[in-house]
Structures are given as structure tokens and as C-alpha cells.
Image 1 (tube, one colour):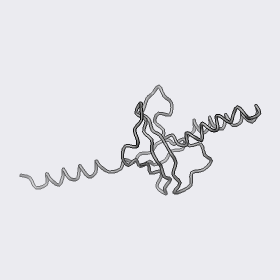
Image 2: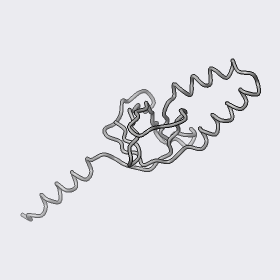
Image 3: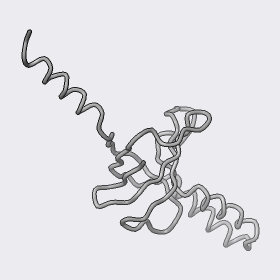
Image 4: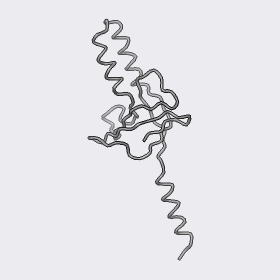
Length: 125
């Protein structure tokens, strides 16, 4: 038996089982994301019919709250805030994201994550 075969199998297992890191767009609706800060985020399966399905979407509660406040604002202020939210949504920032595990799975393949901003990018568990 070839002595290198067990070593090759071990190397394949070790390299395939670690955290998955990839560059991807990140949408978040707070003004900043400080180093060490943790945000609640979601990913969903890639779907060409759904915009942003390939993004890491964070702070959905903040987005919902801002949308709700639009109705209480004067028209010109609401239009300005609405344009600002659209700009955040359509111009995501790209980060190196490291995923550890599979997140918390929900219906339709959506996974929820706790993501921390690091010096290397964003780490999600």
C-alpha cells in the first residue's frame, strides 16, 4: 500500500473542512460598523430573479425601522431618506467574509448569522 495515500486523504479533509472565506457584497443600514462590533445578518441562496440574493444582508431591523419612520417625515425629508436607503441597498460594500458553520437555517434556504467586523473583513458564525 502506498504510504502517501493516508497523508493525501488527511490533507484533503483538513483543507475542505475549515471556514469558508469569500469576497461578497455586504448591505448594512447603520452609519458605521466598528471593529469588533457584531451585527445580525442573513444570506439566501443565489437566485437571479431576486436582487441581493448574493449579498450578506445585515441590520434588517434597522432597515425596517427606517422604512416605518418615512411615513412620519415631511415629504422632502422622506424623499431624501428614501434615496439614501436605496443608495445603501444598491451600492453594497465588498468585504472578505469568513463563514464558520452553516448559520441558523430558516425557510427558503435563508441562513441567519452573527457577524463580527475584524481587521481581515467579517467573520460570521
